[in-house]
Length: 625
Image (tube, rainbow, N blue to C red):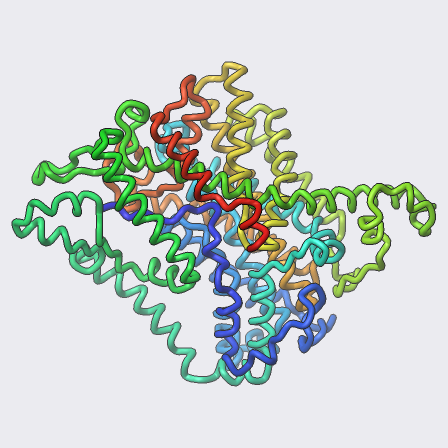
C-alpha cells in the first residue's frame, strides 16, 4: 500500500494551467484588462518604477521567505518539484494588503506591483536547491556512501546546498539580456510561468483587483490553511480510517481473503492528505490524467503481467498476514535475477523520460545555432570596429545574428537598474572555487572532472532555459543523466573505489541538475520583472537572499523529515509511507552506470526501448505541438 509520488524531474505539472490561475486571481471580468499585446515588451498598464520607491523591503523579504519555505517543505515532504511562483504572487499580495491595514509604520507603506515581484523573486530563490533533497541526497544515504545519519553530515549538506543553490543563479542573471532582450522573440521564449505571474500581478494591483482583495472571499485560503493543519493531526489518531483508505483492505480483513491481490497492488488506495489534494488542484487536468494513465498502466497492467510471466517477484512483509506481499522492494543483489515489479517498471519509465527529454531538445538545434551566432557576433563586434559601425557585415557568419547584435538596446529596464558584471561574476567565481574545493574533499570528486561537469552543466542549462521558455518544461533529467554517464564512465575507467565513484557521481549530477533547473526558473522570474519593468539588479539581490534562506533551511528540513520517516533512507525496507520513486531511479542509474555488468533484466530494458519508441513523440508531432 505504498504511495507512489510523481517524479521530481521533468515535472511539467508545476506550470501547467498557470494562465488560468492568473485569470482566476483577478476575476473573469478583468480579462480585458490583462490582455497582453506583445509578450516581448513590457506590459501596458503597469506603473513605471519610481526610483524613490523602496521595493526590497523587510516585509517583502520576510513574506517571500515564508512562502518559499512553505513550498520548500512541501517539495521535500511530497517528493516533487513544485514552484512557488503563483503561490507567492497571489498569497503575498493578500498578506501585504492585510498588513497594510495595521497601524505599524513599516507595514503601512504603499504596496505596488514591483514589490509584489520581489516577493515572488525571494520565494523562487528559496526553492531552487530543494531538488537535491528529493533526488541525489536520499540516494546517497540509500547506497551507504554518506555518514550514518544526516545529523553527522550537516556541514556537508549545507555546503552541497550552497553550491547547488547559487551556481545556477550566478550565471543565469548573466544570460538575461541574451534570452529576454535580444533573442527572446526570435526563439519564441514566452516563459509561460513568468508571464502568467506578471499578468496576475498587474491584475491584482489594478483598481478592480484591489477591490476584490478586500472581499470576504479572502477568508477561503485562511480556512483551507487551518483545515490543512488540523486534518493531519486528526488522522494521526486513525491513519487507516481517515488518512490512508484502502477499501479492498477492509474486505480482506473481514474475511474476503481472495481480494488479497488487490490489496498487495494497492488498488483504490486513497490518501486524504491536504498536501496531495492541493497539489492536484494546481495541476492541469490533462497532466493529472497523464499521471493517472501512467499509474494504471504500470500497476494495473504491466506489473501484474510481469508477475504472471515470471519476470518479477514479490516479498512477504507481514507476520500476521502471510498473504500480504510488497511489489516495491529494491534489493541490489536481486536486480538482475529476481527484480520486483517496481524495479522492473523503473527502467522503462526512466527510458521514456530520457527519450522525451532528448526529443524535446533535438528540434532546438536551430535555436542553439542562433545563440551561438549571436554570441560570436557580439564578440567580433567587441574587437572589430568596422563591424560595429555597420560595415563589413559580410564577414560575419550569420547576418541575422549580427542584426540582433547591432540592434539598439530595447531593454525596458534602464542601465542603472541592471545587474553589474562584477556582481554576478564575483558570485560565480566564489561558487566555482567553493565547488572545486568542497567537492574534492567532501565528496571525493576529482577537480578536473568537477570542472568538466560544470562546463557541460552551463552549456546544457542554455538548452534547459530555452525549452523552459517555450514549454515550461525543464530538461533536468537530461542534464543529470549526462553528468552521471560522464562521471561514471571516467571514474570507472580510472579504477576508483565503488563507494567513491557512487558518491562523486551522485554529488555532481545532483548539483548540475539543480543548477540547470534553478537557472531556468530564475530566468522565468526575470521574465516577470522584464514585463513589469522591475529593476533586474534588485531582483538579483532578492533571489540571492531567498537562495541563502533556502540553503540554510533545507538541510534542517531534510533532517527533521528523515527522523520522522527513517525508512526513506533505508533501501532494505520492504514498505514505507513514502516510496520516493525518483530516489530509486537515481540510485538505480548510479548502480547501473558503475556496475561491471548492467544490472537490469533483459526483458525490462527491451520493453523500455520499445515503449520509448512508441510513446515518444516524433518530429511531426513535436512540430504540431
